Image (cartoon, rainbow, N blue to C red; front, side, top):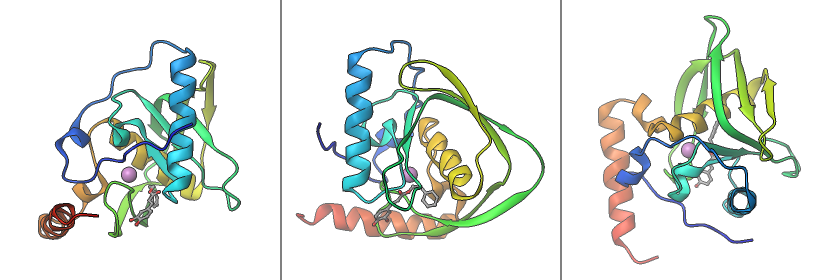
Length: 168
Ligand code: QAP
Ligand code: CO
């Protein structure tokens, strides 16, 4: 397994639209394992392939308390089930140190494939529903900072650009 490098806002590669996964092969299984390891190492609850500069429609998520229930979503699609919305303070491994409230649909249906290519459906609740929408946004080149005011987004951009100029 390997820890992958996570791209940080405003890296333009985070704006790439990911392509569907077509081959369920050994390379995909390795990528899934590396993404799960990278997510745990970074203390994240979710990671999209876009964030590790792989532009395939693939997400890993773990919202469990003990961080031992990784979920894998390949080629995920969301249907919004009703008009109810919920506001949750979100963060992102690609926007380290910043957290802002984002309003999203509360009730969704997710259709995806697992890492073997088997189709499944899920009606997620709570943080999982938020996280799936946040991660799917990454595959479409979208970040949670796109939902905050332009002023806040610009402040976050400046602070991260300054940090990225400092040697770690
Ligand atoms: C998306 O985000 C999410 O700034 C996943 O310093 C987050 O795992 C969905 C993280 C919240 C719903 C609610 C962020 C770790 C992790 C940071 C993450 C940081 C260290 C973010
Ligand atoms: Co994110």
